[in-house]
Length: 415
Image (cartoon, rainbow, N blue to C red; front, side):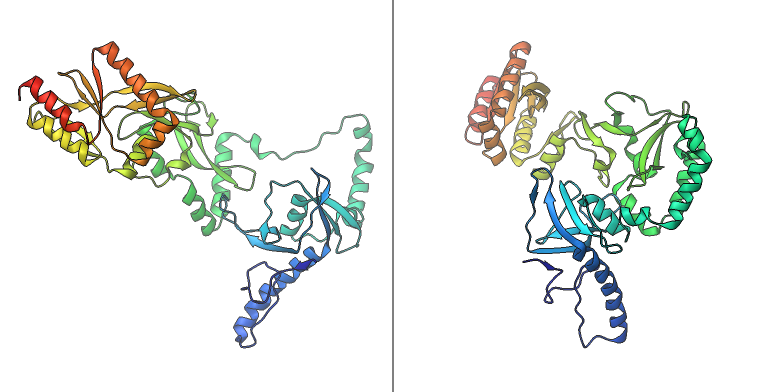
C-alpha cells in the first residue's frame, strides 16, 4: 500500500508533507504553520504525481510503502544548503542512483518518464511544466520561429555562430574582480558556512612554511604563489580556493599537499588543504595517532639535548640512562615495505656508544594488531638489517625483561 507523508505523531519538518495543526496554536503560530503547509502542499503535488519508480540497471519496479519529499542538508554538502530529496520508506535517496520516475504532469496530465535526478531538479526549482508543456508555450514557439527565420540560412550553410558570454575567458584580473563582486553579493550565512570548511588567507599563511610541495611536486616553491580563497567556479559550490602565480598568472588548484610534520620532521601528504582546517599543530599520521594515545613530551638531558618520550616506561628508561651517564637519543627512521607500500619505522631510542637500537613495548591492542597483521615483523626485519649495516644490536624491551637488560648494560659499563 502506498501512502504519502508522515504520521500525525511525528513533528512537522520544513518541506515535509505533514499537514497537522495543533488547535491550541496562537495566531502567529498558525501563520507559521500555514507557511509550512503551503510548502508541504506543493510537495504533495509532486509526490502524488509519481506513478511508479523503477531501477533502470535491473529494469525492475521499486516497491515501497511510504513515499515523501523532505528538505535535507547532507553531511558532506559544501554549501550547507538544504535541498529537497525523495524519501522512500524513510530513506533519503542520494544523487548516486539509477532510478527512473514515471509521473503525470500537473499541468497537462501527460505521462513522462525521466531520471530521478531530473525529477528532483524540477522539484527544487519548483517547476510545474513538463517538456511537452514547455514546447507548447506560445512565447517560446514565437521566439523560436523568429530565430529560425532570421538564422536558418546561416545554419544550413554551417555559418551560424552562437554568441557565448563566457566569463571564464576573461583576463585573470577581471575574473578575480568578478569573483569578489559575486562574493560580496552572497549572504552572511553562506560566507560564514564557506569558511567553516575552507582556509582563510591568515590560516593559510600560518601553515605555509610547513608546505613542501603541491600537486605531487608540481609546485616546489611558494614564493611567487598567492592563496586566493574565493575563486569563482560554476557548480553548486560556487567558489573554491586556488593558488595564483603572481608572475605568470597561472592558476592551480591545491591538491596533494606535502607537509612537514611539526613533531618529527617527516614529510606526509594530504589530498587537500581543508584537512588541516582548525588544526593547531600539523602532525603526520604517526605523530597524530600517538599523540591521541600518549601525549608527546620532551625531556632535557644533562648535556642540554632534548629527547622525546610518550609513555612513563620510556621516560623512566631515559632517566635511568641519564642518571648513569649512558648516552641516549631518539632512534632513527627506518624505511620498510608492508603490503606493497612504503612506510617509516621510528625506533624509540638509540644508545650510540653501546651500539644499541631500543624499542620499548607493552601488550597494547595496537601492538597485538601489528603482530597479527605481520607489520611488526616487517619493522623488526628492517631494524635488524639497519643494525647489521651499522654494527648495532636491536632490542625490543617489555616490562618483564627491561630490568634484565638494564643489569646487562650496568655490568658491561661497570656501573
